[in-house]
Image (cartoon, rainbow, N blue to C red; front, side):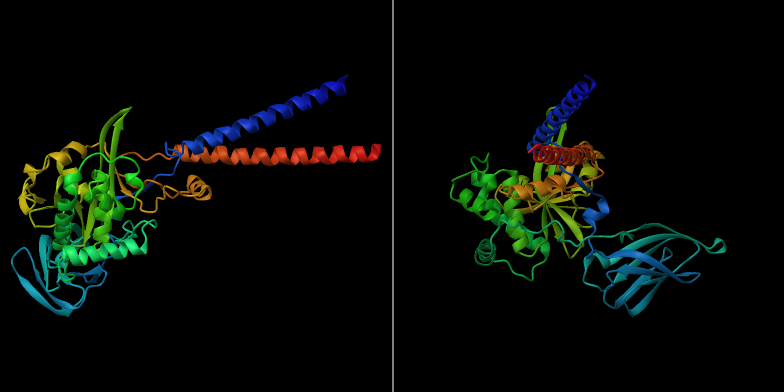
Length: 433
């Protein structure tokens, strides 16, 4: 009787084990089917990673040659040039044909103006404020217009690559349009190129603005452009961003797509897609939004501002000395006070917004293996999120991995047990025969 009871208990346990395993299988399948609802890994980056590239001139280190002489280690190392350094008292001296400038420190807090003959705008004129106390061997960098960065940075094209779904023929055709219709001169500064591309695209697409229908958003950017130009479909902010991304990168202007979203419970509070272009002459990323007809927003020094610059300015209600390069109602390029055209950014650049750089490797028609690799991997489907705008929590991703690995472990145990059971059953039959 005891043996029968033990046998029944063992078989009941294995039945429950099998049912649990089957339940976990369907639970895993449900998570896979809903993988875009938080189960994919969210990649994050800080301000330095998003807005300072390897190509950006920056102070990477300092070398104190003597107690009152400080060399700025600039990376990448600029070409040899003449530098003029002026201190707070108006005293100046020249450095002839050197790559890295050396500051002669004065006691106390002083601001030093560094002027170079380098063509790159970001190194033409800069200031650095230093507190120097020789008796205490104390040197403190208070602020610097040349960014001070010693962290690992990425190249400007990290987030700008075109999607693999865009064919070489489409790239060739886009470049032909840029050459023959936009008539872009390769020698033009980046900002002037952006102006010409923006003017052309808005003139072609604005008559088709509206909500896209059908599979418009699954088309390649050039196909989207052609459908809109022939009045066969509509364009929204995402289409504008797709098309501009293609044209600008084909014109050798590193350009990426920026997405915004925000919600509280089920209520949507923000959502938009636009672009940022890398202005090599300034070593800065520029906010570009063709939907609101903005080509650039500039500070008082005529330097371009990026999305986070605008986010901070709007949250601080700081619109002074800022201007915007826009396409006016007559489709002509104009420069106006930013405060007069800032309403669109005020509407979507809220403190709670999630800002992310959209990946260009998304393939809507990926195979099961590709989607499953993405499901288990740490390569974000949506893009790289700006870490300062919202709290990133990948708990669903790690919970999914735990359930998946636990299921695999239980499956191995179940398979091992069933294999042993089959072997013992087969052996028993052979003995009986």
